[in-house]
Length: 137
Image (cartoon, rainbow, N blue to C red; front, top):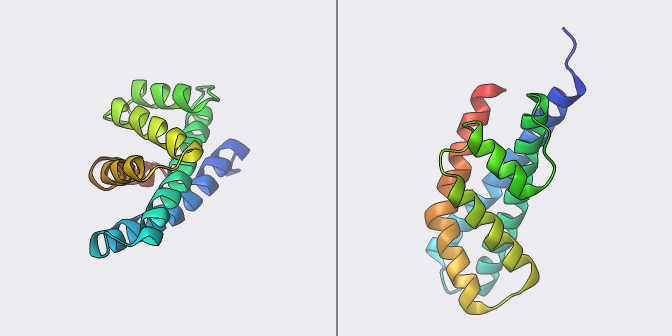
């Protein structure tokens, strides 16, 4: 059986997503142990940005493999929600907004709020996506 290029693409991206998620989990665990450490805060934010980027691109590739053509992150998230891949679309839109904000501005207050969201809301949602896609591999 030949693996189609789009199937291979989403599965390869999923592997990279899994690696990034391991790093994000490590960063958030370290942050819980050392909440005042500025470098750990930066690690949480940067690993979140990378993990989120790989998450939405994996979703895009998975949707494309299943015949849904999407390109932009917000469009990908809306279609993933509409197709039942994401149980809570709003949390993912919030992730996108926080990722965009943190990628262009660094303010301690915003960073702390983003880290709170990453640890309490975003990481569980990202892990749920990982489990869902793991079943599809």
